[in-house]
Length: 203
Image 1 (cartoon, helix red, strand yellow):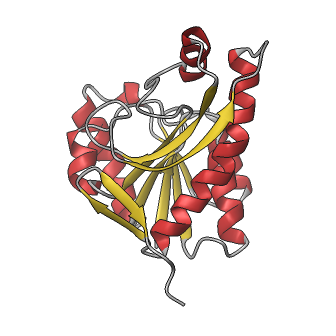
Image 2 (cartoon, rainbow, N blue to C red; image 1 turned 120 degrees about the vertical axis):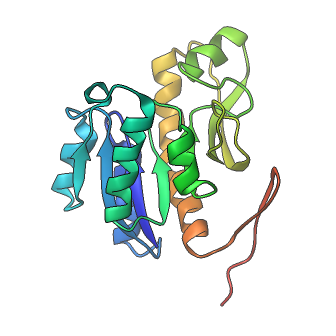
Image 3 (cartoon, rainbow, N blue to C red; image 1 turned 90 degrees about the horizontal axis):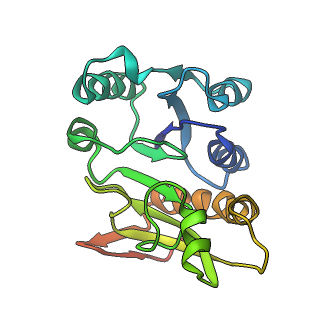
């Protein structure tokens, strides 16, 4: 399986994926990292790891359709099979979903369906929940509304700030995302409508 990653920021989840691929935990190749921010640290991190990396600035395009057509063109050139959104700060639009529908996953720092969108950790603290965490889900045309594949829970501690909670959730993101991508690469993830389950790996 060829995996491409879309990232807007630091790229730490991309780096966790790359490490799992390098250790043989994911039977796949990381073939491309794309950022909508040409200055994103994710791109320099990818290049240091020997992964092709490309910045495609959204503001170079007059509309989302043209921007996503450019994305899809690069993804096709890289022969990407699976698209992982790892800190990608844009919604997937019709062009991307048409090209990769059912083959896009996202990691989000909350236990969806609670606290979708931006500032999920701040939302969780303001609501007063005692458990937060992260979710890997299939991407659809909504904001963090696609079917859930897997989740990891993180306790909310007294005195937590959005930053301290985010740091602890990120530790779990770095474990959960490679695990899920490994399941996908081995064909273990099965889906019927919104129901998703993991089959045992065939020996």
